[in-house]
Image 1 (spheres, rainbow, N blue to C red):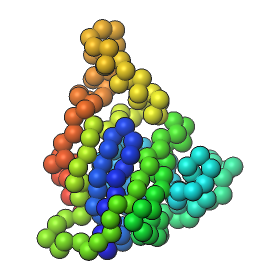
Image 2 (cartoon, helix red, strand yellow):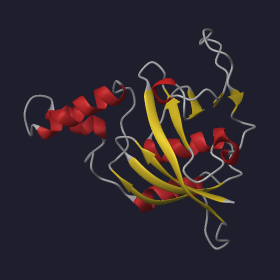
Image 3 (spheres, rainbow, N blue to C red):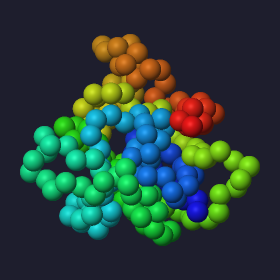
Length: 179
């Protein structure tokens, strides 16, 4: 089974990956497509503030106020998002509260001639590490929108270049390197 999904965040990605991929493997795929860091969990949609009641991830003892999530290394993407229109949240770096809303757009059969995961489309470069979550990233982009001036060159260097730049071929080379 093949799952197609959009990842909504400041960086948009349209991915195809096999449904047998585990949540933990999907997290590694995310690292190569939208630059992710820190602890993570997947949450099926429908809970308060968009968070679901079913949580998948890796138990991290420093978050003692939470129940341990369902082990993402043993749970497939098909179990997390079993149907078209299924949605879930990919949350990580809990200090900065990064969240990516993911929606399943299609489920079909893999093309045996293709390598998966496959990035089909995208917009914007990924965000830099430790930029302060979505709000901090938006502040960095606002600095660039003002044009040359105080902090412009530093922000541009930190972002690694054009924040609107997206290279699908580069993303797919990185995905192929995952094996």
